[in-house]
Amino acid sequence: MKKILCLSTLMCLPLTAYSAATKQVHQLPAQTIDVSPTSHLTTRLQWAKFPQPNYSVDDLKNENRAAIIRVVTNTKGDVTNATVEESTGIKALDRILIDAVEDAQVKPHIKDGHAVSQIGYQAFNLKLSNKDALCDYEFDSKVWQAQQDGKKTTFKYQSKPEFKLNSEQLNGHNRQVKFSFKADKHGNIKTVKIKQGSGLYALDQSISQALTDSQISVKRTARTLWLYKKSSFKDEIQFKLNACKAS
Image (cartoon, rainbow, N blue to C red; front, side, top):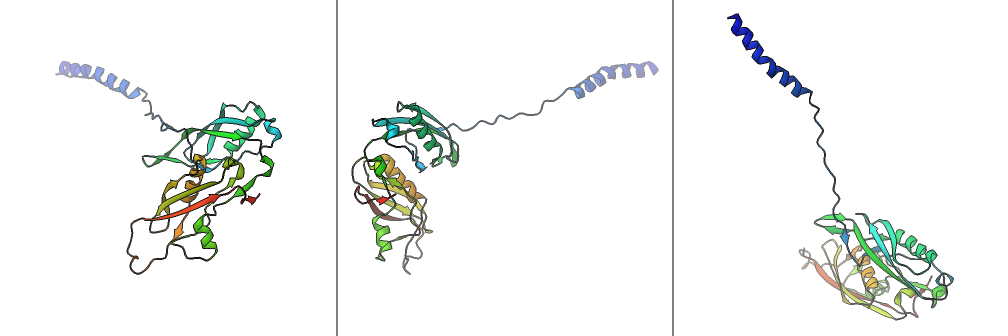
């Protein structure tokens, strides 16, 4: 009986030793790798706050200049990096453009319900003519002007859409933009469609962005109070070279 007991004890020893060794093995903690979503690549950035380079005629060195700036943003639309893709030929002027881009804001790009970072390009055309005599335009659309004059309109802007444009950005021509948009039951503008463009993509996009951040109010009748579907509205805005507001 003692022999059997001893044998049984000896047979258990390797298993006990193995079990102890197993407990002493250091377990590495589970590791996760945070992979950022792929950036949205575009050649046409949608600006919430358009770059406004502050330069003078002297900065151009007696020539019209052009440049392309490569822009990287985070998910909030903040510019995290701006570099020269095509130079003006003047480093100091390139720096002015980069500073303007870094101070601007891009509209976040939504993918699958989530904002993602963006990489895109912004072109600049800097001209000698009348740079020191620039003046500014605001969002003085047909409906907004009628609203200010107390005239009857199909809808009213709850506040003036935030929009700025200087005469240089018109590239020497009068411009007109006709657009339509949809608004939900709360008056939030959701979908903007350019019906007749100005011929300048950046200008059209700036108007779309200004509208998207705005609200309208509509007088409802007893017959239409029940309506919950989006309603469609239209407006237009003109930019004339000889009718801008002096800055």
